[in-house]
Image (cartoon, rainbow, N blue to C red; front, side):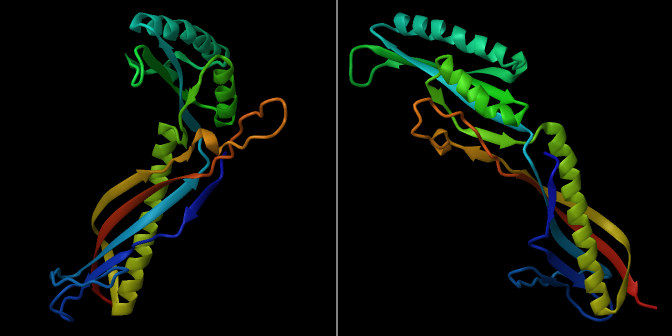
Length: 245
């Protein structure tokens, strides 16, 4: 659960202006585009950083469905079938704040005179290795609708990895700026400005039919081998420079 991998930066753009050497700024990115904006004694670099880590939180929606001759019948069935589900959530040790009410709907049948309805619960699972157990226990308790399982990162983990991704992006920017300065025969004197943007958090999703089935008489246990998720960040850094001594 502790594995992290720092990936190489991508989409690095460089803009450099050489006072006394050129009358316009040179800007380049992976597409090779140029601009004509002039900025004296500055090198501007855009760089990305990305960090991968094993997910430490999972979410899934579980629900029940019912039908009947009247809306009242459907409502009562949904209520009675909800009780075993709630008991299962308690037995699984899910805190109350990790069990949220989802959709509750009753409507006329599309091709009939009766009514049908559904009710769902949104579950947050802090132990990702228990995601399959939660699904199996929910089905045993009467759930007949299992939504996608999302594997992601807790808020505190996201914040920590966001800083790691920013550190990686800044290191990539520093390296690129030093390369440009050496190529142009100048020296970096310091950082004039830093802008961060495009912080994103990845998730890994599994649908119910992604779980393999077997031909055994007993139903298989649901298990997931979730892929790592990522946090990425982008920075734009402007450096001051002077002629090399």
